[in-house]
Length: 131
Ligand SMILES: [Zn+2]
Image (cartoon, rainbow, N blue to C red; front, side):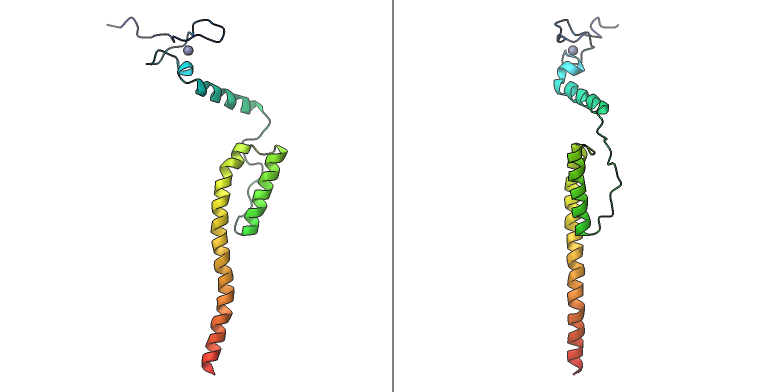
């Protein structure tokens, strides 16, 4: 036996005041009336597709193996967002990663510089031992 109410309609009304004709979910409302934020979100996505802002990074990122390279990349990202070449959402997604990369290369940079200081010191000490 098939229940009469197996395919209930949404209880809400459309913007024009007519009953919504979409299929209702368990709450008695259709997906969009039950999730008004979702509709706005989908609308925004649709709007973004029509805009000229590219969703992808326009240029491949350079090698970020030095503090200065990360700084250059950040500078370029800011310029790209400012000029409308890069979507702010992409930049916002990259920001914490660049931050992480900066901290990583900063640590490597420090190690490299420490090595440059320590090596001659060790050599000098070795020479001192010989005398
Ligand atoms: Zn509805």
